[in-house]
Length: 320
Image (cartoon, helix red, strand yellow):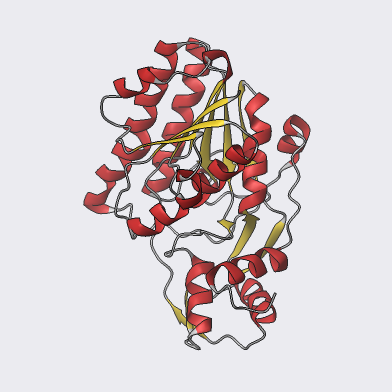
């Protein structure tokens, strides 16, 4: 039986990954500290199905603290894969005094977990969830792993790049198998309530205008959560320390995305525009050629279909 540790297991992507692993008959230890960045009851609801599965164990622990509790993990070390998804999210909240929260949960926690994995030995792979935010505002698009120099445009991006570099260092210097995956604008069922499509859909159902920062002409490479989870699964066997983009091939302007959402929901969506926020970037666009080459990964869910699935998740009575 394969054994996994999933950090950030109660989050949007983490819980989706946990359910996928359990459906494959794997044994999963999930770690989550349940920070109150958003309603923790939402996170617990994400794990409702997993908690009914005897192959799942939940550890409510802080990764930046003592990790000796992991020493009781009884799985076969040769089959142990660590998926490190835990992080403090949010570009706009990473400024000012809150930055120390980001350094604790994104850098300190990652280094602590890497040390534990190295000291334990026998880890099959350490798969790190990185972010497109590490790139900042590149001079050319699309963003490529080899040619685009990471220059983060937010404190959040700085911490994600620092953690990614730590993972690379533990591979290069200590031989810890690893892969890092740079996620681009993930959406879909279980999306956090502060994220754009969740907010947009909720507002549209209430027939309220949706709030858009900037002029709506900024572009994003939207990636459906199931495609991200598929990339994570494929990365299990990529152990050389590569960092790879996972972008959904759905790059459109925010206005175009809202137009697609209106089509899915069958209604006109009104918009309230406001000023851009500190740390926002004008464009994201991933070259996913390296992930295709190394993992055989290719996104398969269109923006329209992905939005339909998120709408139905938020309102199960919506016509399917």
